Length: 310
Image (cartoon, rainbow, N blue to C red):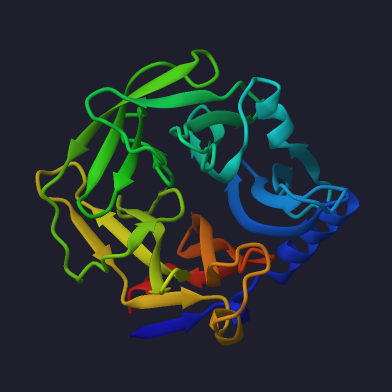
């Protein structure tokens, strides 16, 4: 196994500015950040404790012009709650021609299924719209669907990596209709590198210069009921053909060696350690990775795209 640490590749200026904004808003324990840069503006979704310092965690959005410390912080939990949707778990950002969007799920409700939602967060906040499947039965608990804009401008997504299953919007509009319906398609994909069995989608996909999609996945290691998570870069190419390719990098990414060592979970007693990747954003030849560390802090690292595959 090849492990690679990101602690020396941090964008310290951006991290420090974001921490200051969260502190000024009375927030603590910021983690699972997702950073997206579009149209000379930075948008960051994250989870944190509010001014009381008490659980449950809430979801927030911070936005600022690139290079500025003038952040605006919005409580996404309160906004979704005003539309009758709660809680807001695992918020992640993606962009289309129509703006910047957040997708999230409603956690682990007892005895019933959860839901996945999409809502616009920039340039204006919209009502959340629930995601539905047109041609398949969903699982009771659904998480980590990865949405992106297709080459024709339509909204699509990745439902699973192994097998490769994609989503295509067939009905509804975010913020305008209560539901958005997607059609599910299974692909006969090629896998140059063996896919770990315990792998799930992490970040939303981003488009690279050669037309492929790059996203972060999570590889899970288990010891009895306890779990540890590391990041695995994934590249999906030739998605518009009958035999797309899904390539997992051989690198397993963690924040640092110390953070990856087993420990007693602060907020989750079954968590040994986690570098949880919520964001991946391609900026020229660089990929900006944003992630949480053990549910108590975050990292924002920048690495050359090609280095992920060497």
